Image 1: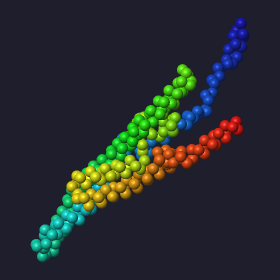
Image 2: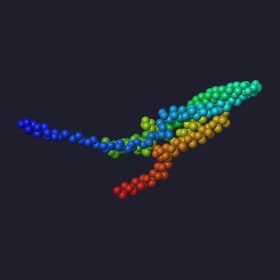
Image 3: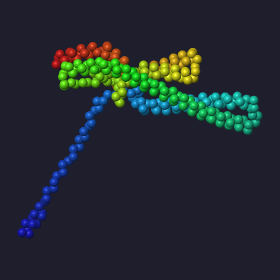
Length: 267
């Protein structure tokens, strides 16, 4: 009996095998979401403070340079009648002059930075408001056509209706942002915002008619250049611009429909 117990103890007890974990990693599916319909690929709540900070820094630098030069000339004019006659006097003269230049430059820098950031913020807010206003107008215009199309679908298909949104049915999915607000982003909104900002700047400073016209011309040129630059960047990054899509549908839409008909006939 003892020999049987020893033989049973000596036999190897099989250990359960642990299944090996799979090392294959599943890659997430590629996102099919269209590119964000935002200017410069930056959301408005980030674009506004970023451009305002950049404008304030640029204004501070310009004001620092201009204010320092004006303060130096003013100090020289105020002390032209009492120029020093000794070496120590000239040392104190230049020391005081540098102090006035630094103080005048810093003051003018803060003033110029504040003014430039203020008008820059007004421009970008105005631009976003015009984008949303134009998007709302387009949405109201296409809403009636979309309702007519949905009613026609209901009559033809009965209860089993596939209702596509207006922007997908009419090729206008590029007219809404990440929050579902319809917008119309192109250079025309930028031109309107630039002209409005130039008019407000002229009215604030009470410019005469000639100066106001010259300011409006500068605003028109800036808005046109900046708006076209944004549209070029938008097209380069794969976003859809309103007038570009209109031209594409007018000149290339018939060709695309013909190609679809030919492919359908071959199938």
